[in-house]
Length: 259
Image (tube, rainbow, N blue to C red):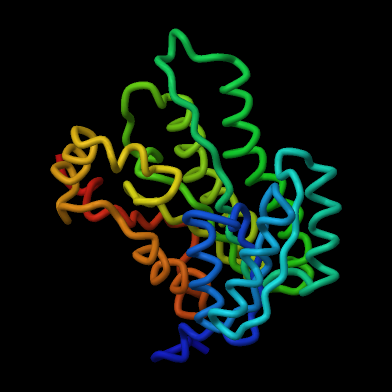
């Protein structure tokens, strides 16, 4: 039966793990899911920081929130971490693959260790979590996997060729997950944010020349606010998107729509 109306977006009783959610965009996504009714597990590399974020989300929303800390670049650590998650909430109904890093340098000067770090976190980490979580979702016969891409999934800029490569790969990995998992009642989609104002991008926001470029290049004429991502996330996490699969939704103020 197709979900209809406002109830289609209700996540009450659903469970979710959001990687890299102790701060920034991930934190806003985790809180947005909690506001929609989902029980949330906050993930980060720093256990204390993740625990604080979970407590604050629970206090703000009145919804149960937990925290875990493990290294998504290490397959064994992901397996152990997901075992802990399963002890808290079972196999998540919703996995949000948000954790990511950035490294900048012209390609001729790009350090091999920076390439390895980008691939390890932005791509291998996503693979490890999707592979591990999908096993329980397949057994249950349902689930939502939502990856976080970027406008750099489609567009390139100087000094971030390696980052763009990892985010472009997210689009195809999402399509591949659809091919493998849709027969099991699982939807895999991606959100591709544009330029968003967060603590991690504050230096760019404060750079008058760069900020003017962002505003001029974005039809909406502004930086994104992290809350702008929540509606798209709740849609892709909810029964409202049960027939949406393998897609990438750009939330970028129109940047990828114009030249």
